[in-house]
Image 1 (cartoon, helix red, strand yellow):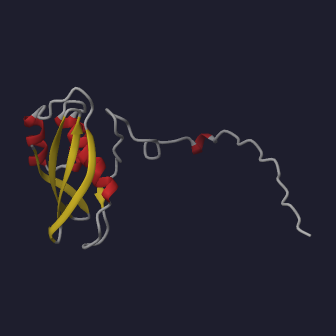
Image 2 (cartoon, one colour):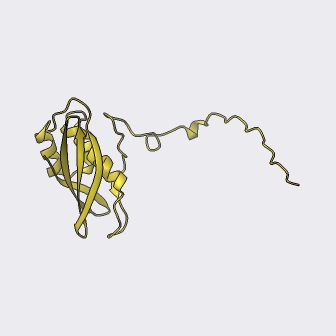
Length: 150
């Protein structure tokens, strides 16, 4: 003879105490455009570790939105080197589209230790674009050092 498990009533949660209120470190990231970027630097662990494809795709999506004029470049400044950021600001709107760009799957290549090159197809309505990004490890953080779109 089997016994059925007892189902109890779950008490309603109490609101958080003042010291448990969200802070700027635990608050959700600020959203600009269609994608919320993780405010933390791109860190993938020890040398030789495999990059997180989701973070790469989010970075590519954010750069595509900047190049389409749908996101301010300041939102990705901490993910780029100073030279790459200057080039991004100078490039202005390189992707002309009537709807928000959508980054497709990411293809990653590691030409040498400490460098990652990726490319992705960016869907822009009637016409698709290609976005290529090079990231290099600077300490424990990965930064975009160059980008190109066609």
